[in-house]
Image 1 (spheres, one colour):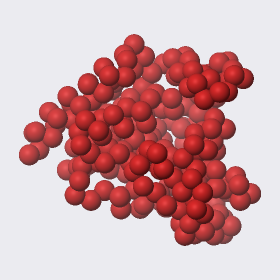
Image 2: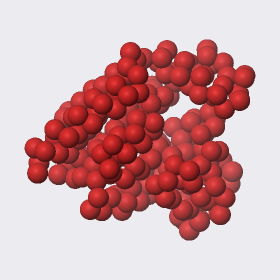
Image 3: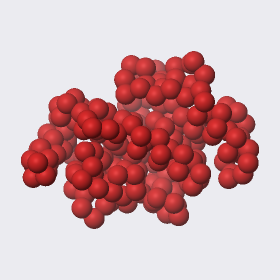
Length: 227
């Protein structure tokens, strides 16, 4: 068994917030894999690299590898070329870039190797789309976190407005979420799906503390069973 709590689920289900809190309570390392796809997507966008598997994309990944610094510190999580991208990768348009780039097998292989290298002896909490199915299929605890598209759109609007974006539109964000769900679930490479041995947690009617409590209880029970 791998010492990983894998939290998968669709965009806007609250995986990042929940994973950070679970890691704190379980005294584990938090690793934001979703941020990594955002980094690659934003990097390609800034460098005018097409989201197509070719030599230019391979060269782009090599350049990114040489200048990318990652630390499991939410205050300064992502540094590229010496610039802190921790906030920029959270902008709404980067969600689409991340979804598009996640379809590319070259990118997924590049990040898969990197993600596995981060997990050593200490327990880790990782969240994404395919952590429990592809990245860490032997994770001792797997959670599939979800919520209705409408609830996720409402949360996203509230998040953006809290950051000062008064133009956030519920209708367009709801449409974006539905399109991304379809894209993530239907892609050929590592599609979004619940692992057979994962526990499904619907957060639509739960507050954050309740969600974290459910996951920590499950993780503690499973960890006790393997030790």
